[in-house]
Image 1 (tube, rainbow, N blue to C red):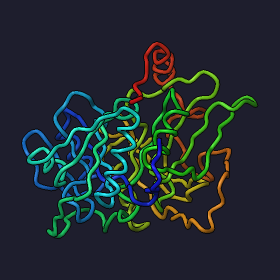
Image 2: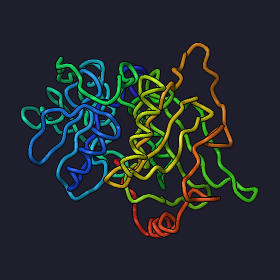
Image 3: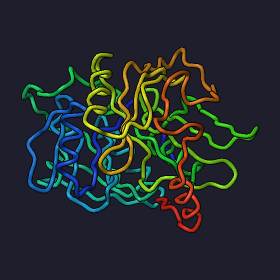
Image 4: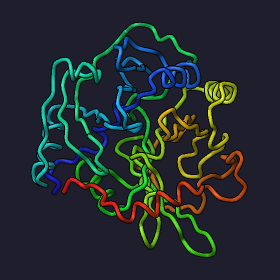
Amino acid sequence: MQNASNIFGAARLGYTVIGSERLAEWRRFAVEAMGMHLAPSGDDELALRLDRHARRLIVQRDSAEDIIAIGMHLDSDDVLQAVTARLYAAGVSTQYVDGAAAAARGVTDFHRFTGPKGMQIELFTTPLIDETPLDMRCSGFVTGAGGLGHLSLMTREPGRTIEFWQEVFDARVSDTIELAAGGREVMQVTFLRLNERHHSIAVAATQGIHIDLFRTRIQHLNVEAKTLDDLGAAYARCRDLGYKLTRTIGQHPNDRELSFYVTTPSGFEMEMGWDALTVEESTWTAGLSYNQMSTWGHDIPGRLSTELGVGHLYRGIRSLGQKEYFPW
């Protein structure tokens, strides 16, 4: 499906749109716990800044309690044309949006289509910039060429999902993590990079029979704090404000990021990290695989031996009877 030009390095996660009825809870979580900047917002929305972009996280009043859209920031109109041409070749059309609807995303305009798992993907080139000084409980977040952060999701269609990101955005596999239990591999996570960030998309899949253990389209959304002090202070605020910490501070073996995980008001997790490595393409070793999610830490409070609760297993069984949406 790919055309001749390669757009690796020219795309990144630009924003996320969350559908939730819990706007007050999201405001408390994002501003007081995670330390983000509250941007001008309407009665039925919440907008948050992490940097000069006018909007990075948008929470819209909606019953989904889930991520409902992501914005992919492309470097130029040429890159946008290449992506839409690839989609068109696969039989996927896009819808052009501008005006107030685009401004609500913090961009001048965008092209949207429905991607894997029914998530709306919005393609844009020009973010709206806000030079108003940031007012937040964090010295800053790492964005830039690597974008907002990363998404991690579980899918019953791992091969097709990985192929989607490779064919449409020229994603590269950074590495994999293979988890085993009872001497058998039970899950594999494939980490896909679109640019210098170690991964913008992590694709998890059970081995053998593919099931989806999560109600939401993603398992977690990652943002990266600028300093270790920012990370520690956010962890303490989440604990003191009573938010459910699903993993304590620890370090991953592949991207070397120190991080913790916390449950958001909509039920999926948010990972705040610090000091994730930046991939240098000329020296990167492809094909590496790891056998653990964490080299240290990331303990799961209140759970002794397994990361999966009864609710996860119930949802996994139910997912066997549900067809997962794929755009082609």
